[in-house]
Structure formats: structure tokens, C-alpha cells
Length: 212
Image (cartoon, rainbow, N blue to C red; front, side):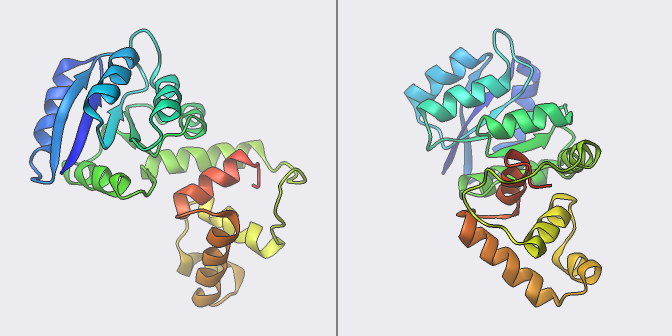
């Protein structure tokens, strides 16, 4: 059973999310928080597996809440569930340790899948949020990567750039005149080299280290 805490200062939103999530027999909503302080207390008392938290919260915003929760309860997975697809909020949430960033227009089935996916240890990002971050990177350009501890080859940088843009392996292969197998193997090598689990973590890494 996946235990979930909902952190949103709109009671009707919490009620609606609970109804959606508990439509799946593997998920149980165990508590509600109207602000960051209540969310922290529930983490201590209930030991949830996942927290769904809005960015716009009373007292403190959700991104700061994410940082506080992940600092004190690193094993708890945290998903930002919000109406904001502003790139600054998305990047801030990533830097604060959020395991997922989803928009409130998500379909019920996708919300259930998001909770299950994050509970398994993977990162998830809404496609529109992904696009927003890609646009931010495109507009702000490329910054040198001389401060990195690992050497990333130009071919790897090119592939990372297209992953950040949301392209699939077959699209990247066609653009870069590579076989799809070569692209897949290069990405697997990047995961190993950078100690990452999936493509979303790779995007986060690229943004944090200004690779693209």
C-alpha cells in the first residue's frame, strides 16, 4: 500500500485528489496538510511514502516546503502538483529535491500512475512543464561546463540537448545521423557515468550543471 499525504490549502482540491487516488486499491490517503508546517508534522507522525504538494501554500511556498521535507525525510517522495508551469518554479522545485512536477490539468489515470512511478523511485515531469523548461534553456543559451567533475563528450552533449527538448531516441537518432541503438547505449552510458536513474534526472542534471 502506498501511503500518501496531500498538502494543499484548498480543502476541495484535497477532497478531489483523495477521491481519484483511492480509486486505486494500492493507494491510501493518510493525511491532509494546509501548509508546510502541517506537512512536516504529518511526515513525522505518519511516515508517508509520497507527498503531493502545491507550490502556492499559506505561510511558506511549496518549493521551500519540498526542500525542508527532503532535508529531514529523504526517503519520502515528493511530487509538486500545481497549476504553474513557469520555468522558474519548475527549476526551483527540482533544485529543492522534488521527485515529480505535475500540473493540475493531469488526467486522473495519469495522476495515479505518477504516484506509483515516483513511489518506485523514478522522477516524473508533466509534458507541458518539460516543454517550459526546454524553452527556458533555449532562450537563455548555453553556459560552459568547465566546473563539472566528469568529462562529457560533445556527442553526449548533443544527445542531452535533444533529451531536454523532449525528443525520443528514434527522433534523436534521425537528427544526429546515428542508429537508435547507438543513442540508447550512449544514454545508458550517461546514466552510469553520472549516477542517474532516468531521463528526467538527466534533464535535471543538465539544468543544474548548465550543460545546454
